[in-house]
Image (cartoon, rainbow, N blue to C red; front, side):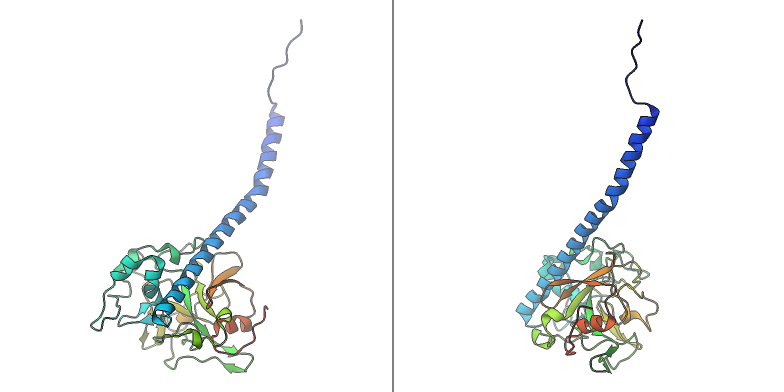
Length: 295
């Protein structure tokens, strides 16, 4: 009398199948992660393009760009762009001083409890202010470019800095300036050659502040909260001391190996963290007369 063999998998066959599935997952996971990061990078790029369109719309209306800091409590450039970021209702909530100028009540303005998606890179991990007592205020991942700091290698002279000193100094040759509104005509190096806004979304930057805060002048000099010098390499140096490194905090991101910048013409450029510093600083200059290479 013959016996029928029971159907099914043996233990060895199951182990082989599980091993094959594990190998396939190991091969596919990096590709999936890369696809997700590519999507996040594209969303970040769209955020910068929105800011660029807002800057241009502001210029069309007022024939000038906003400063990085203005008003009696020194509001950030972001507030001026709110009407062009579909945030008109929020913009109207900000008070005015006796002269009718926009104002904020404190450096941790209560309106910063509002999250603005266009100000946050999806790859960034720090969404709130890192300053004590302001941890419930949303920050921004996009900071204005004060300009280059250091030597212009093509002239052999240092780039111009403010005369107030302290805080690392504030460059006088960038897209955003201290209480000075620039126009297209001031970008003599060309709008497509001048960095306007860059990412500072990396977790180790250490100087994330509420998005309404622009900066102020203290005994230590110009203190910029919404714009930074291009002095250090991308992702190279975090915030260490308000008196020595605040304005020099590095642009950087959580995108592997790169950071994205908005240029004066409204386009977005990916900049490698290994970019040569003379080229990087030249790109941050609006009027240095440098020849920019791709190195």
